[in-house]
Length: 464
Ligand code: FAD
Image 1 (cartoon, protein in one colour):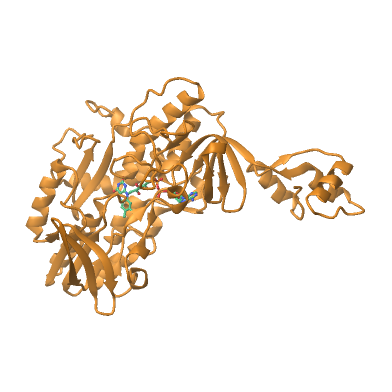
Image 2: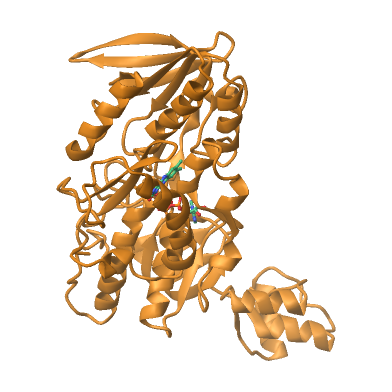
């Protein structure tokens, strides 16, 4: 179908983004194609119309590598691919104009960073030579190597990488969407509410401060408790009569035993009331009550906790377009092999980041362990070689236990500690707080998103 009504600039932009292709044709051929597409061929075409109509015909754009999602994982893997082979034709399908450093939101809620410090324009992060298609994936057809976009375009690929991250499911908790952002109900999990967390902490005058954690998997499973520790410090400093309650859906404080032990000590030292197997089901904003479903063995019961401040970590899941696609596993995540990150049914599909179906802890740090494996195996796939690279489940959660204190929890699939530093990783340290606050954001913007390898490999004695 020929393109009409676009300026030459718009046409050139579409051409650059691969949405159109140059198809020279005769005037007679053009009139035929207009007629067959239901358009009325004009009796007379001026030179400009003829130029537009004959030379630019939209088509199914094709890219050698199509990355769906231009977040932490999508940008990182695109940058590493271009570093590995400059000539690769790589496109990122990403609707958002802005990208956020989400690990910084804990410190936005804790009053250390401003939200602006965590934001950059997406266009400034797209690696040089990578095409950015600003739209969302609306459908996956891996049997025909194609993706439909939210603007109705069809994109085909040789290799697909799925990196859409997770969707926050506020809607699954009754009354939450209406309650958020006012009356002390806050969440660091959204850019829209993280600044309000700090407002709510400052406005808190005493009473119950309740911090929830949703069932796994969620992004950064440590984040729900980090903000509880920061808030507790603020309340203590102000000598408020505060009862800090950490109500989590999980059966313990943290999934990795080595790090759970010191965290239990932190909870005890701070006098935090930790309640396990507590799933938030409703927020009654009028009565300032949080309702939980509590599991005790085989039995369940309802528990209502009154709050003066409520920090919510919502349930999360893969975007519906992924979950309902042929790429999904039984829980909606992309069904890839947990070691080589290749799709188990579609050999030209890979996935990394939060939406991928590996059983690792979902963090930006994990992306740094995954991206080189995707790149190496994808290139091997293109070269018809065996896939040799393996991901060991590396993840890192800087567990902030207060202002100036952090346990740098690094671990793998086997839940073994894999510290990057020659120090006992289970100890709270000011140095790790400084790394979380000053070093990691700089590494994220300047090295990770630029495709540089993990710094761990330069640290003597560390097996990266
Ligand atoms: P994202 O970075 O979320 O990117 C996904 C992208 O996909 C987005 O840009 C989105 O617009 C796009 N997208 C979605 N749907 C579609 C679609 N249909 N089509 C095309 N594009 C789509 N990690 C750490 O390492 N350390 C921490 O301390 C830490 N703390 C955290 C604290 C908080 C409060 C939060 C929220 C996260 C934290 N994380 C932390 C986790 C980290 O931010 C994520 O694990 C990381 O961003 C995952 O990268 P991703 O690319 O998979 O997802």
